[in-house]
Image (cartoon, rainbow, N blue to C red; front, side, top):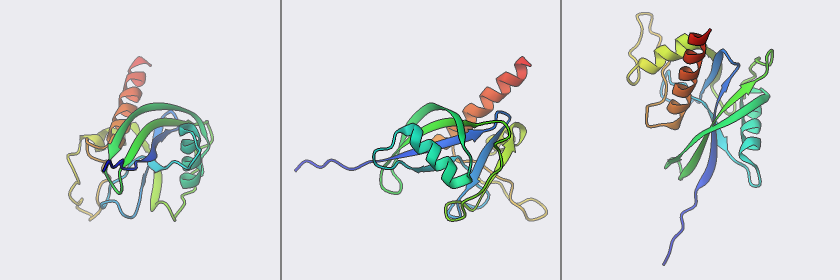
Length: 161
């Protein structure tokens, strides 16, 4: 018997307004972890359509432009092909409307905040006031790659200025 396992296509997208990136968290994430937006592609939908729909559904933003980055097989929950993209929203189009059925919270983060979070190794310990600094997915996750690419691009463009 030959078995062909099914694989579900998923888009994972790091949204930027050109100076900040948008990170979100689901209630199922470990405490303090933020990541890029992600969602399953609908039947008959292109990669670009899925990115635009997911961003609009999850945070109420309209994608101005997008660029494919990479893909990764992800075995959870039931074997997915993660297709990673960078998306940019237009100037003045940055007001977030979080879909609370999809996400716990979402927010814009500066280059400095994200670069600091990338340097953390795993979940950070609590601060003195009891809060947990935000942290990012591990290096094995394609979300980490998207965030790292954004930091590299922002850092190189700020060095040119």
